[in-house]
Amino acid sequence: MNLTETAYAKINLALHVRRRRADGYHDIETLFAFCEDGDELTVDPAAGLSLVISGPFGEGLSAGEDNLVLRAAAMLREEAGVEPGAAIRLDKRLPIASGIGGGSADAAATLRLLVRFWDVELPPVALQDIAARLGADVPACLVSRSCRGEGKGDALDLLDDAALAGLPVLLVNPRVPVPTGPVFQGWDERDRGPLGGGDPLTAASKGRNDLEPPARAMQPVIGDVVDALAAEPGVQLARMSGSGATCFAIFGKAEDRNAARAAIENRFPDWWFLATFLR
Image 1: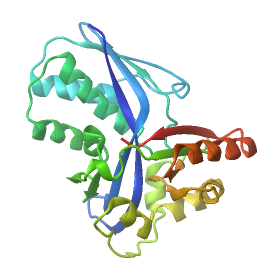
Image 2 (image 1 turned 45 degrees about the horizontal axis):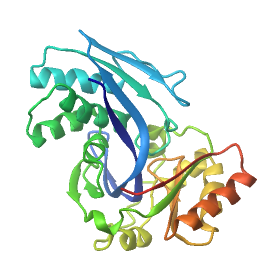
Image 3 (image 1 turned 120 degrees about the vertical axis):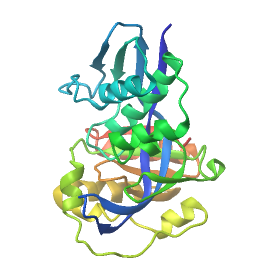
Image 4 (image 1 turned 180 degrees about the vertical axis):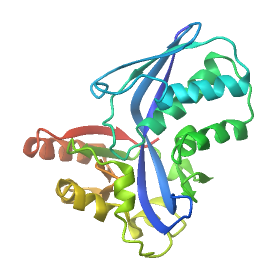
């Protein structure tokens, strides 16, 4: 048996940072959306747990026990009392430290994959508990559906998928890493107000990403990416995702998205591009 699972790319349509918490995290309000594409994980039978990483962004990544994929596998194995192991292969297709899920999406995909592979029967709350222990974004990545996140981002309310599903989206990364911790540390601690409700795209358009200013201060090229996307015809929303440096633009038509990619890639051929759709 050979099973595969996609670690869907995550984008934050809006991300409001409200306050710094005593535990070192921040209280946020965010709108998560997920793309149809992402990293790919495959699993085969094995006595123990192992991980092999390949793909365009796999070089230099640790495949040891500290990797979130193996941590997720070990935690699920213990929680479910599973004896067999798993030989996991990760095809790393998305840039690392880029604000679109990364290791969190890989860990979540590992949980979904191994639940099927080991034929595990655990209540959803138990899987969400494992996800929350792995990281603040992992619970959202586990469901990989449009949702609103509060608290650390792990208190989730699912949204109507029909509001966003199928919308063309273009992801662009200028190939600069932006570590999440320093970006949050660069937040100016000013609460600029709550994230609105209602239609998610409208709410996002009226919102903001409070991490964009500190990320731009670290990597000014992020501003160039957002400006390039926002200037293209047919754009409904252009913004940086998460803590950066990946930025996105949502379009009403796939042909406008494709034209935007061609135009921007012609000017900036060294940037990374992914033309996809929201789930």
